Length: 188
Image (cartoon, rainbow, N blue to C red; front, side, top):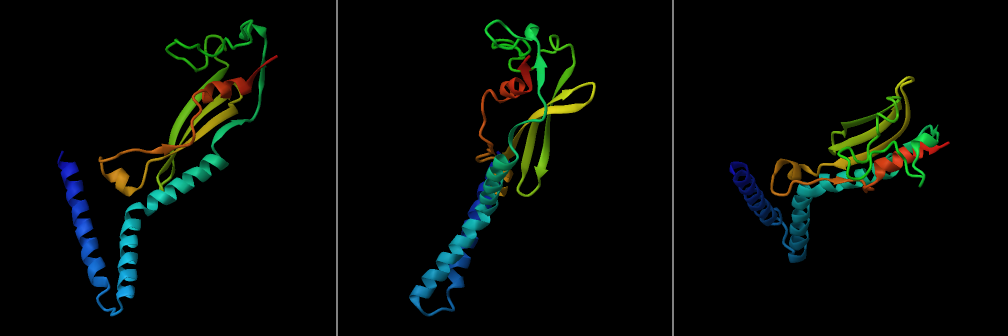
């Protein structure tokens, strides 16, 4: 509760400071139009101070999602018929309703493959994290494929206030990991 009051008070002080500076920055000018332009520019600068890093972060996120995000397959593995149901669906992915739905069935794959998930800071400014899920062949430690997703945690106002904490991520496919497995492990 204290932090919310502090943030609201700081925002009110910021608005008052912006109004004061915006009013007095145009005093040296005599033309009414020039005063309006100078004050308008001052207001724009004060707004940009609040949101510029958020705009840059969202643009950078979109670029990363497009250029580096998504599913990347480096090598496929052919699995015999014992890994597939008669209808063609995989036995090596836990089915809907299972507590591990959508992950690799380690019992069926005899611990030959490993699913490794990681979150790491990718960029500090703007604050963007990268989430990856990799499928690794245990014996060779070779990465067979991975899915990368980037998450932008918002600009500084968003991060330092609890008024509207949120973030934005790459477009999410609800079956992204299942699709990763099905692109790596193919019917042989």
